[in-house]
Length: 255
Image (cartoon, rainbow, N blue to C red; front, side, top):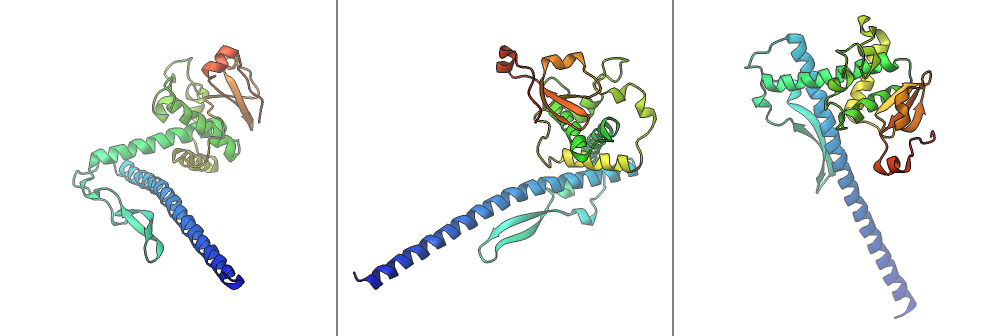
């Protein structure tokens, strides 16, 4: 084989490898976008549920013959692979909207109530904090919902023990703070942070914390917990693992 032929063959192999790499990259991109679109679809549908809940709460009892408004018939956008265009953006309708009744609206109202409970906790516990500080307080509540030691709903976690003079988990629920209703820019911001946290945007900035307190106090209960970090004026803690309990490790350094 002469030199020119060898060079030509090498060039063909290099071209083939480049095309193969391009195809693999495209395939991976499509898979990633499809995964992202599934998450976006879930978040879009959550927003639709909230919109429906708001209408339900404003209107009161809704007749069983209620039909969804036209703008809700296509609630989500989805990225799909296409042989000609590569990737196309399509509308995805909610599942079987024609069967919606009051039961579905009550579920939506329940979601709205959960978001409101989370917003109230953010407002009364951390309205002077930065966005990250407020998100951290919200994350503690969500972490408790996922923990078997606490109620399995946001409202249940936030108002746990509030019916007693002592024993409430969040001070604002039993110290009279709620006499003054949330309002103004701080309340609107708390609602936005609540929606952000509820829909799962962002990472857990607390490192799985289930407890916190302000830097102004040093409560007795933090001795049995692992300190995860300080954010703003709050210090956060989590339950120790079995290994940590055996080793007697109950604190970690701040980030």
